Image (cartoon, rainbow, N blue to C red):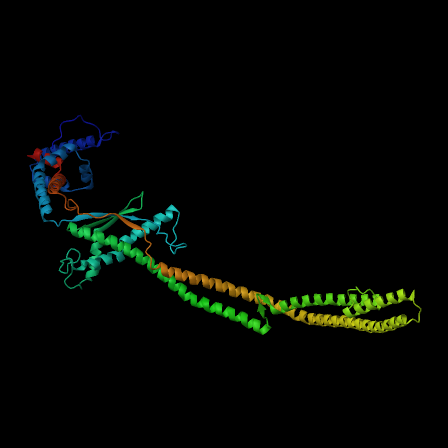
Amino acid sequence: MSAGPRPPTSAADAGISPYERIENARRASAQKAQQRASTVARALTSEPVIATASEPIATVTLDKIGTFLELDFRRLFAWLRAGLIMACLLAIVGGIAGGAYTLLAKQRYTVTTDILINPGNLQVIQNDLYPQSGQIDSQILSARSKQRILTSNSVLSRVVNELELFNDPEFYNPKSKDDDAGAPKPDPKLAALRSLQTKVKTASDDKSFVTTVSVTARTPEKAVEISQKIAESFQEELASTEASGAKRAAAALDARLGQLKDGVQAAEEKVEAYRRSRNLSSSNGQLVSSQTMTQLNGQIVEEQARAVAAKANLDALVASGINGSPATPEASGALAQLRERANGLRQQIDSQAMTLGPRHPVIVRLRTELGTVDQQLRTEYARTVEQAKANLNRSKASLASLNTRMNELKGSVFDDNESEVTLRELLRDAASKSAIYESFLSRARQITEREQIDTTNVQVISMAVPPNARSWPPSTPIMIGLGAVGGFVLGMLLAIAWGILRDMRNPPNRREADVGLA
């Protein structure tokens, strides 16, 4: 590259472009080279001078590197033109290499399976062990957690064991050259698991709970089989995880049930021991002493009524006298008959006395009979009064006895009521422990049955099918084109690098100085 003549400009002027500064530096170098050449011709001693002048030119300094970093497009095009043949050759080599790689590389096929992972389980029973959340954030977290299980070691280990991938050279090759000769061989199942992890990818849809599983293998049939087995193992793992959680919960409840049962028995025994120590007998939920006091109170009321009735009867008898009215309620039957007979005899005597004399035999007979009836009436009256008095005294005595018994019972009832306060507290404690025990017992039985039910809500909405073409390597025309483009670009880069190194070793001002000396 040669620089054409340009109008001279001052390097100290502000605002000049880097290209102008490079041109000024080249012209100054050319002038200095001409001056050195004329000096050497006059002195006739060119070798020492040339050796002295060539030393700074051969040195690569930071200033020279900075100068070459400010590239000139004409120099760049010259470098590219010089390396065009090499770039074309590399493009041909790259195309051939791409075609050869397509033929020699191991082919891979990728299949996809779409799985709908619902965040909530099937609602089989109320108050399930795994409740469903109504918040969208919780549902998303639940779906993403289940998606993580899809590619977990537990699921993939099931696939490795059931399909025996540890015997497949694609997933585990015991004669692999990558293993060190002295190192121990890895576990075949672990090696196959690691290889399978690299061949399984998942992607989730942001607007739904659908997860896409991609599986890569060397044959379409193997890829489809692995994809189907992953979906099946995923459903089994979810069901096993939930069953395991229910089993742990049931085991924890069963372990706690023993303690709760002992607590209930101890509380009930404490209640019975307290009742025996305080002699607190109960019937129909009420203490016997309280029931006895209630019954005794009724008896006292009845006895008071009988005493009042007996007193009224006695008073009525005394007030009516011997010849009272026969129809008096308090009079006995015999007393009433005697009174009625005596009154009848008196009436006969009065009626006969008006016609007969006082000594008439009829009058005498009637008076004699009246005297006998009066004697009987006085005797019956006296007996009836004594019986009324006896009834009154008996009622008073019975009432006094009942009052005495009531007074004695009041003290024990008050003591029983005070004891009943503590007893009710013990009964409440026993009832609460019994309720908790029954609740835990029912929940444990429910969870035990829940363990046998699969409530996972996972659906495979798109099964894996054999692909129409391989996923790697790309088709032969594409690989040839990529190889050719890559080779051509590499050739251009090498041409630019070679041009920069050549100019740094032999800058343009050095070449112009050599031409001037010649």
